[in-house]
Length: 275
Image (cartoon, rainbow, N blue to C red; front, side, top):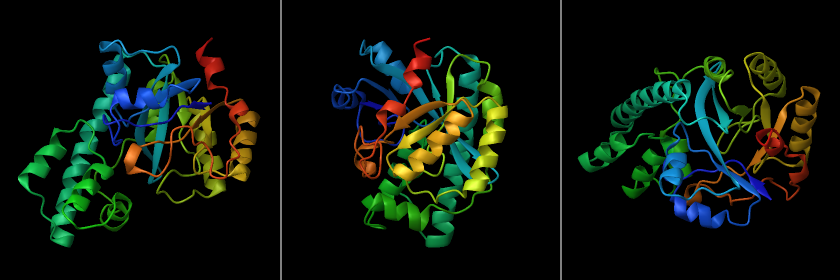
């Protein structure tokens, strides 16, 4: 069993690294793919926690034709200046978006965060919607993180995410494997129209995309098979992940399908990493 998509406290997960490592001990291979940061990898190396079954990963937040698109980057060089530049650009962008969200909450809903909450959000290297949502829940504006995101945090912002093709172009010649995360839509996202997806896939391949996350916690057998066929037709690497966030989302480590039809044998990411 493998799981190449999970999150720690270094982005919007609730488990620290030690907790995650304990929960992944029975996996053949796994990756911690925090949003727009490689701090998990740096923590693991610094503290001598590296395991033979651990693969460095990061999930980069981008946009394509107005849609939120996440790109997974595996087995990178942590000293890669280009990767650091991309992460800094995304991080600077995210903090501008955080400020916009705070202003929308104040102007549209008369929700004003206490200084303590604002200091916490601005102290984060990687403030995300779940981080804001948890404060909304704590202050009794919502009963759950999911509800808070749906009700308060789905406004269109003027500060746009970094373009997907730009990120692919920046990283395609660097060490690492670029994989499109949850290609048909992730947790809390609307499913993408399949014609639109095929157009996106063809464009992204031309910009250096190497694989698809075909096996995913929200996808049933029909969706898995659809993506697997596309991956094989385009000679793409196949990855799989749960998108585990600890208590923030209702999915478990190693949970890679919606209907218990996980095709673990189709996942070949490790074959390419070992080369």
